[in-house]
Image 1 (tube, helix red, strand yellow):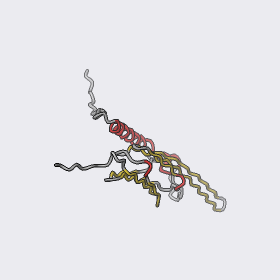
Image 2 (tube, helix red, strand yellow):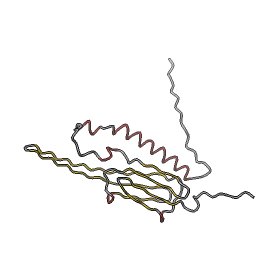
Image 3 (cartoon, rainbow, N blue to C red):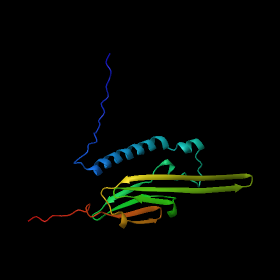
Image 4 (cartoon, one colour):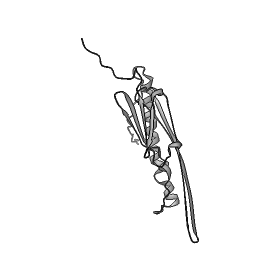
Length: 171
């Protein structure tokens, strides 16, 4: 009797050129991928299935168990981060960063009351989120700028002097 064997492709994580930032970026990328897959497996509207889905619900579940969507754009002199935070108030957002990582934390709270004759319905919804991302290069933490408009958080983080690209003239 022979057992069928499964082949799995495994990409080893190797430190390249003793660059700790590169190695930690690989680890964080894999952890973020694992977190995303776990959230897809678990969240998939399990709360709506449990409580039912009312078409007239004005109260949505904040982020429905997901983390905010984030774009990180590596530009010539700075790094731009855009995060979608619908339903979150400016005062409920906390951004912390160091030269290689940025963490966005926030919370939402909503309340809906409906009363029609003998019918009374009250729902309270609250949620928190936190997301930590690895930056593509080191940034100057003291010169960062943040703005929040229409549910979109934008962080502009100037690159540190040693992270900026330099061109060398050939003689």
